[in-house]
Image (cartoon, rainbow over all chains, first blue to last red):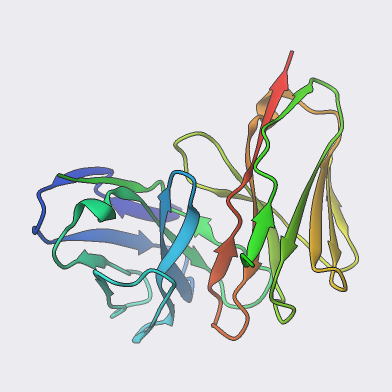
Length: 113
Length: 111
């Protein structure tokens, strides 16, 4: 199993550009989430999904959109990149139910200049 | 009050030592608790779930005290390879299965 695959691994954007961070999992997990990690801030939840067609906002959703058209894929769209969105982005997935921890992808390091 | 709080450390311990990390959480309705490990510039990896009765996995023991809203992780016989950041994680109650992460406790095991 590949697990959770994120692409790209690195990206540099100019302010105002848009892009999509891809996330795919092959474990048939119901739950998927996007987090960003900044120095001194820990991991913060951007958006999450409990199944295809269902998404919800986390604590820092502004400037990001998500959709979940299939169980496998959960792309994160940056609408108009800002330097404040420079961060490491992690996608994660989990089976439904308590006590199943999330499996994380290897991350996308995004720099907005 | 932050939802999940941890002492950031760093904890510097010699090989073979026993070290304990603590964590507190603010939402008494939370039901799922975990410890994750994160190596520098890598993704977090699940170390262990934490159960009310306490649980052990080799050299690692996790405890949960719901009354005090307190979680602990004990590492016995520390190895150099245990050097990492340890993240305390609690689910967001009433929000599906979203998770709240502590900022992590840094551990450095020295020869």
